[in-house]
Image 1 (cartoon, rainbow, N blue to C red):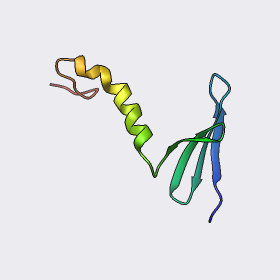
Image 2: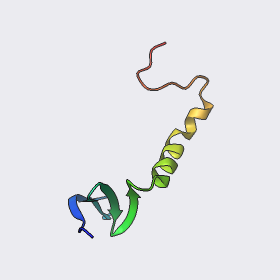
Image 3: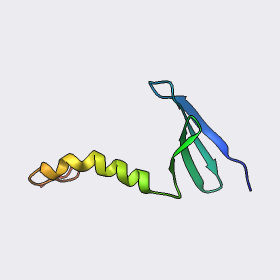
Image 4: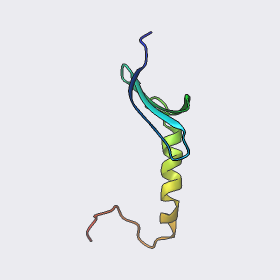
Length: 69
């Protein structure tokens, strides 16, 4: 098995170490060594999108940004 390659890292405002890593065609984001998101599993991305778009249900005619009628 090929090793993970660290593409970059940084710190969240609370000090958590965030890392972006790649192995072949798989990418992962981790926080203090714990997996947050993976290009092989989409559950966390879908949950984030659902949370971020929940307020749109209250809009009378939600449309993508930049959409012209």
